[in-house]
Amino acid sequence: MNDRADFVAPDITARKNVGLRHDPADFTLPQPLERYSAEDHATWATLYRRQCELLPGRACDEFMQGLAQLEVDAERVPDFAKLNQKLLAATGWRIVAVPGLIPDDVFFEHLANRRFPVTWWLREPQQLDYLQEPDVFHDLFGHVPLLINPVFADYLQAYGKGGMKAKSLGALPMLSRLYWYTVEFGLINTSEGMRIFGAGIVSSKSESIYCLESASPNRIGFDLSRIMRTRYRIDTFQKTYFVIDSFQQLFDATAPDFTALYTELADAPVLGAGDIALGDAVWHRGDRRGWGESGDV
Ligand SMILES: [Fe+2]
Image 1 (cartoon, rainbow, N blue to C red):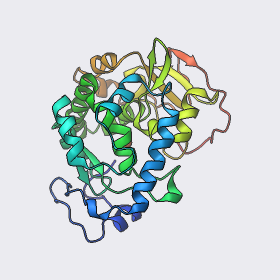
Image 2: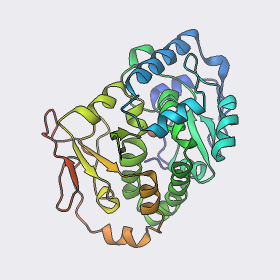
Image 3: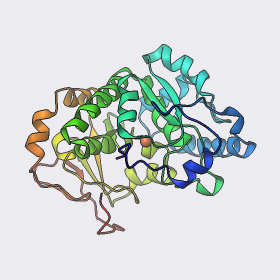
Image 4: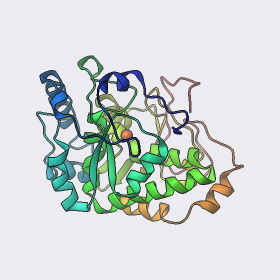
């Protein structure tokens, strides 16, 4: 989480943004299309092709439909303005270019107003498989296709509104876990089997396979208050994935005001990223192979 007071841009973000200025109020800038090199476009095409080979049958239909309906460019880093024409027409969302990670309050404000902040720059070729902070491939390929789904689009806007409130109540860690285990690393149950919808997964080649096929991680039915008590990993694959039944379930569970829940959970014990708790709807109990014992955040 980033407060403005302690906000520091990571090195790669600072390097990519040399000479560019963003609006200090909302952190947006015009997408600097002229900064994309031929190498950037080639890297985008490689990432796109790799994921599109893997994702059919693994990602949920809504994601695949969004990718097709938005006509996300396969060969070049997409032009945000072009993409926005389709996105705005579909659900009233649009994407805005930002330099990289932005402070929490700015992020929430954008979501609450149906604007999704997208880091404009792309990882370098030696970072195909992993980089610590989000780039345009993660933010755009990973997050934007689902914004064409009306229920998910409303969920994300509600999350933004809830974020501003959680901040004022000192409950951001709990709400951040919800985002992490749904928007970033969520799985969804379908009549054809378990599928991926989380952006952190669909934008990662190795985690797209691991999350569904590995015996290591737990796969547990979605439970709002349980998720709000669960720590997570930012440096390795997740130890636990939570599985929703539908986007409507997610929207309905998160529609009520969380104030009372935050109070109730304030003194509840926090669970480790790989713990199984009493009452969990366990789809798969992980065999814990390859897990580091420390490092949950
Ligand atoms: Fe993300």
